[in-house]
Length: 250
Ligand code: PEP
Image (tube, helix red, strand yellow):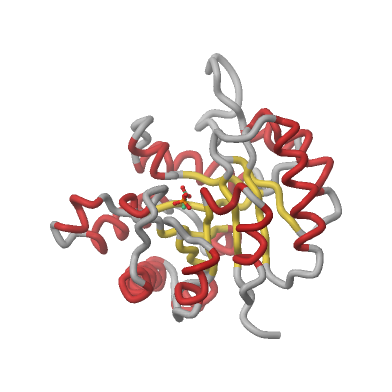
């Protein structure tokens, strides 16, 4: 078997329940012969309905966030147990919108990562620098810090359930994509960090997705890069017509 990619869609706060069900139905059909790993992350309010649609398919159910705590007086939050109760298999953590709009820091994200893994969920941990940080030459350093702090205390065995998503903040939803070479350079640097934190085998095995305005027109050259193992897709993940070609590029 050739290289297997991991292509995921983060639907963000875009779809009502009926729209989510319709999109999920379309994707089940479109991707049934796909040979890659696929995940879709609807809003909390659509998880239950989408779970019924994708049950038994080759698409994993993801959530977009999760509370640091397991239970109690945390108004408006959603716990890991609530996600598991609905059939969620993966949780996206540390998305740049959580970091930059809602002020989530590495410590909080790390707490969520450890809780999700302890409860058996897969984690898709997002990292990425802002434009200011990139222009200051700090892209690798920011990604290293987010990786080290986000994964602090995560065992080597649990790394089998961790995916990293490199998403330069300046490329998300802006139409600007990192050049394949720039993205590759950060992916390679992050893989080195994993080798240093764990070992070379763990670094070789970890999946590092690229995210940031990935679409059918630019996904191939990104996926051709040695250290780009998949994509975390926002805007292009909202329609079968744009998500399917990315999923089936390889
Ligand atoms: C994202 O937010 O995960 C993302 C990559 O968004 P977009 O594809 O819209 O840039």
